[in-house]
Length: 119
Image (cartoon, rainbow, N blue to C red; front, side, top):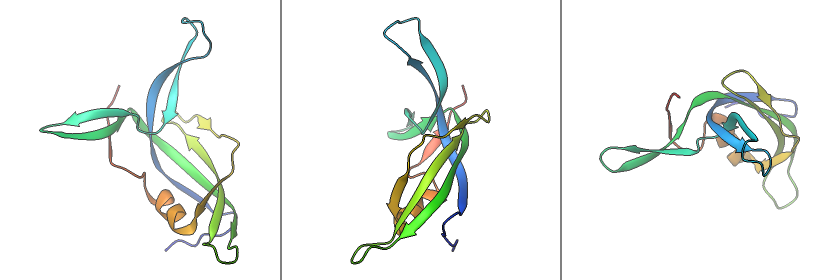
């Protein structure tokens, strides 16, 4: 089992979907980019469905600190950086927190099954 301490960095494979976003109310102002996550749905015969993405990149978790408040579960505070399939880095400036058990699951694998559908 991997030790989770302040300053530790974890990486895993993460799905990315190619999307077109409107940057303003002008319909011609469209930007295409990689979006973290599996957003499309694909049908699997005979009657099953699965999330789909267009490529795989990485997600990097950096542990900032770990705290165990009295009478509560241990919390892990961390930042998250995405590396898209082309090597671009997307790093929102946000501090996340999870209970220790959920953080362990999150650094191990994406939370649901998905398939990669090439563009």
